[in-house]
Length: 231
Image 1 (tube, rainbow, N blue to C red):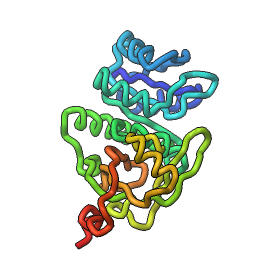
Image 2: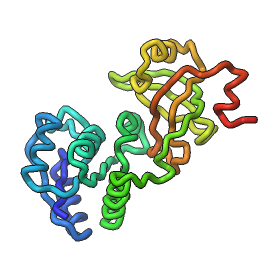
Image 3: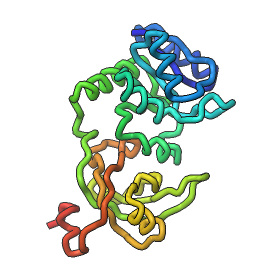
């Protein structure tokens, strides 16, 4: 395939080009800054790109005003091109920013794990999901979420929470604006609630795969065990 590369670092562009060529593809890199998501779509269409590999952090030297997860989500919605997001920060707070878009980003690969085989497998997984074949680890299920803390990371207000249906011992973070209902978001922000309900892909194999959708108020404590699957 003709695979477009979007990355704000010249050395990483060269590395990705080499990996793609070894994987059997032709690479074309976007070196000029991107003014908008629509400009990205227009460039992909003008180049005849058949797939995309996009870095998460695109803000260096004002390359783009958006991050890679949002770009991949936009390209999948507009063009339905097999797309792979890559990042060096999936084991840090950086995953919290990605989680804002993670339900619409089928494939995320850590740069340290980026190989020709991983890229080709990523394209296959993304293509399958575009065709409606969604693996169990990407299926969201209604479950209880326990709020552990609310904290600020840069300009974003973040929630640290435990999802017992996924891992009762490991906390994960997400942007508070994923809680779209304003009153519930304020209650979470003020720590006025300890539990909420959300749709979470609880069969995810690792924390970087987790995403959160459709937050709602938790039921009465007496009924919470039903939501958590505790009988």
